[in-house]
Length: 535
Image (cartoon, rainbow, N blue to C red; front, side, top):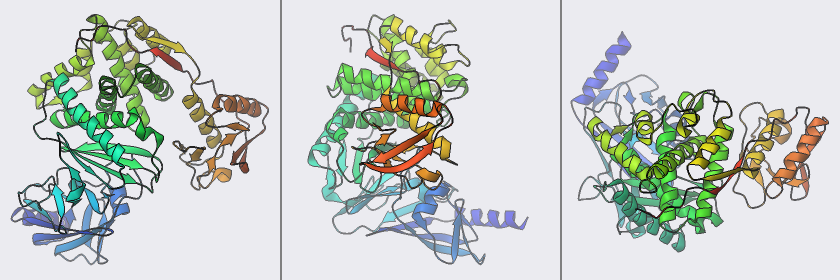
């Protein structure tokens, strides 16, 4: 009862006044000072994000921060405190980083700083050095920061204003910045036209490089700001290809399907909004000339094969993936199925953009909320045995993937069986890791001369996240199919599998468990029937 009374007292106290937040950029992060209207015994933040706060937030020595609640260690009331925030040390799936370096400046995720109680007004101001800007800003003076999403605090010289404002770190090369700007402007025009919805506020794009993270990239959207984070110390070959445009196009679609409109169940139906954005990016890349027909087909083959490996027997409706790559893979297969249905039914006059436009228009009567049920209805899902969306969504479908690919072929695609390097690489490495690991397993791609195993201290002879370039004497990048075939024979004979890197032995793993069936895989020779472009 005393705890409840204290909590009520704290909440009432905050409701009577204003919470002032003063943010001061420093060379290694942010200093964030809170001033409260009256003393409280606890201060609760709106978002818990325990892992992120443990990584990036530093509470005063006489206070403790746990589960989103700040208290003094001696239990006494307080009316002011100061937090140090440093950059995230690792990317995280489906979580916003708290703080990311953008050259000399910072990208800040505002919602992490909000109190849980939305009744007392909260005013957050930045104390920027001369020549710095704060954007988006809530005031003309330019120092009051919004806590609704991303914000940039840094040198004004990084900003270039066009249809979309681009804020690029000096680590973003000029040609990459130009590609980002071109894709951003093209995506804004293309999506606005095809969805018949124009953005009320011109978007801002923040692009930066995080050299300490494993090679790759990650992006997300919050408010009117698109964040693009390129990982690794070196420029990847994919940054000079159509993949950059696809990356930008994917994130830009979220300005519509996550900001103007909203998914009813973003966690359990993540495949819906992520699949929409990724498939939209393929269509936008093709429209912009950044992706060829063959490249779109290869992307779809990769997504199909990965969804085959990830989707469980209950189907996309009964047991959808909720995190990781499978969210995107299976989401794209759903959107591709809807697209082919729309094109086939209209002789090419309609496509999946027409389905999305109808979905978003219908959502206006529900405060902009849409869901999978509405999407599937507008996409034309039926109970017919060979209807492609039913085959993907329903539980316990016999020969799900053979029947689904046949159904898509009947709608104008040409999909043929094959062996998948990516699927067999993952199948091989995961099998060998499971033999010796106690806990999570995985590996990182994107390296030019091998792969990096994600083993930590959980995997005995494979401990230490080693780089490897051969398994059983075969290159894990260029000779994967032969590597898997060799390991099948070794494991059948209950032998030992060798791992090497640059000619040196990394580890030897005894294999007494046979590999399972070869992963199902398909090649997409034609991803859509050729029609005159009606758009």
